[in-house]
Amino acid sequence: MITYRRATFDDVENIHKLLNAYAKEGLMLPRSRNSIYENLRDYVIAVEKGQLLGCGALHFVWNRLAEIRSLAIAPDHKAKGIGRNIVKLLEEEGIEKGAKMFFTLTYQPGFFAKCDYIETAKETMPQKVWKECVYCPQYPHCDELAFVTTTVYFDPEHMIVY
Ligand SMILES: CC(C)(COP(=O)(O)OP(=O)(O)OC[C@H]1O[C@@H](n2cnc3c(N)ncnc32)[C@H](O)[C@@H]1OP(=O)(O)O)[C@@H](O)C(=O)NCCC(=O)NCCS
Image (cartoon, helix red, strand yellow):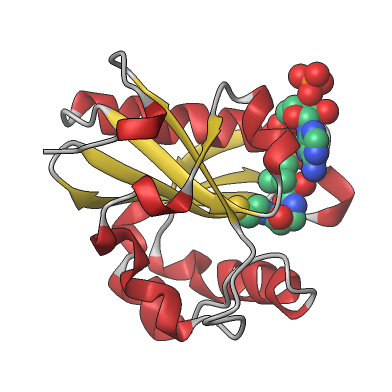
């Protein structure tokens, strides 16, 4: 049975391995152990029989604005709904804490569309969103797409987050 739970210190090595394997393929931002430790409370993981099947993180960026990031499902466990379940759990936690808008920067538009996110122009995102881009090997030639979803109506052409 798959269990979804918060990550602990014992999970850091496995999360680090999973994220950086995909980062090497250029699919996501690499994460250092330091970054995972510092943001450990952001992470939710899926496990089965002690094995890490997937992880994802919710990072608060600004007032009511949260980023879904570091989402990765182990290659043998893709397409079982784990990714979507992790996104839902992260959103639930964000909503509980007052978040109204969620965004992600991704190369997987199809997956996030299935999670009810819509593409928006990156330029409409608050500058604070780009804080970590300097750590990305692709910087400044980023071709990630920005996807957002919200609990309130908004106009993606004129997005302002207070
Ligand atoms: C992208 C990823 C997180 C999706 O997780 P997953 O557990 O395989 O996806 P799910 O099984 O929850 O899929 C949910 C829906 O999205 C669809 N989907 C999944 N990945 C997709 C993709 N890459 N493109 C289009 N649709 C996709 C599924 O078919 C499913 O649709 P359905 O409801 O019609 O059946 C996973 O493939 C992964 O870890 N990829 C490598 C790392 C990565 O790119 N992470 C994203 C960084 S932001």
